[in-house]
Length: 596
Image (cartoon, rainbow, N blue to C red):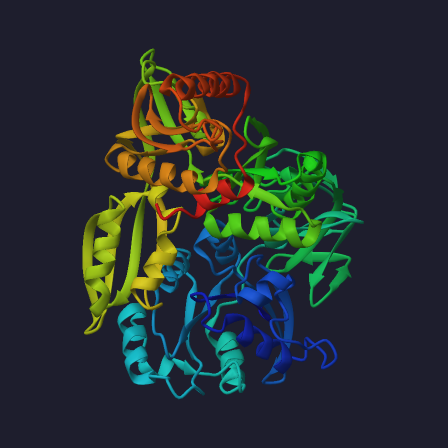
């Protein structure tokens, strides 16, 4: 155990984490020249294109230092705020962390939140100033920021470049010198923390774990504490670029276990593995069931593909246990699924993966968060779909989830950022100048306001400089109403949305105007209305296609024309009773993109 070091890398998005990991793997000869490529730990094409880590990875390196061969276990972490629970479990599996900061951009919101998480877990922090080869690098100013944040000395900060390989050797040496070896008793009852899992179509779910105490051998019977399920360890081993089976792993080791598990719900990130015949006295602290934050309906563009969509989502769920789904139907869109996601990025990624990996064209309804509805009878309902909200006559009040948001920006953009957040019903809690031109703003605001287009707007008003991070702070009562869209008096369920009473009139008016542009004209007038309960708050009319029936009447008595017009009017009325309004697909897509 004295020669094992377990560490993770924490950084904001696009600070060069994956590139630096590539250089570490090259220097320790973990990856051969033939297998070397950029972002070697990012296995999905989507990760490479977007430059983000979606799925966390683990890899073991070996490095010879002072004549001793050390085992270095890198447990990679996803960078985006949506995956913060996975980051917390990866951090709990380590004794140290490389804190990577971009020399051109300085400290950003995600860096700070992950750093606090690492400090709470008593990790040894090694600060690394990356991208030193760029002309725009500003090392002196960024070093001052790091010293203010971590309280380290100037000599502790390693200058490096993932691109050119400068400072990589120094990082490896510092890892061995500074990070303590794992503590644990190999002869104690088995206690291992699951920090990730992947699905293999031939072998089932493969769980990645870090052993805190005890020893595990091939073919032993193990138990997963939170589910209580028991399995035989068919194969255990360590993770290099591929899996390397071992007969035995003990305290301090990071490895994988294969036991033929077929459903993702049985392997949960943060769960504890122990022996069946000699279980540990308590599970590792910090386990929680991941709760979806954002909900949206996903429907196939072609209604005949419903079963294929179900199969695709089930397969996707094997790789991504945080995705939840249940069947639902809509009058306008047919049969589909109400899916739960960790956040907007997660929703985008799932849609993109359905399209790429399964060739499924899908429509998603307006994303919303989960609300708590309290009825006048004292019942509490959890509502994921606006259409399931009780009517105004039964409803007592609604509570919605709130978040604490942390935004770091240049001081010149403070005004626009404050206007944006206050416009989204945010309340400024704190304002803190990190340096002369960098300011940290803390807001309390409803989660429902940021799921739509908040992040894009924040980036555009701050010219890409502002960084954003948040965590949920609980539920608060709110003055929300359900806004329904009616076509000729019939409610279209897929267009219903929950909105704050103060914004409802403006939003309803925009929806009606947009639908008027998109719904094709029929032989009869179509009334498009926005309503709260029984009260209509906005209306637009799509005028009927008219035939000039009086064209053949030239001259003569006015009663001849009137008779023809009355006959046409009766026909239009009858047609309106039997005709129904078809809402085109692009109308749903356009309403999603509506600037709310």
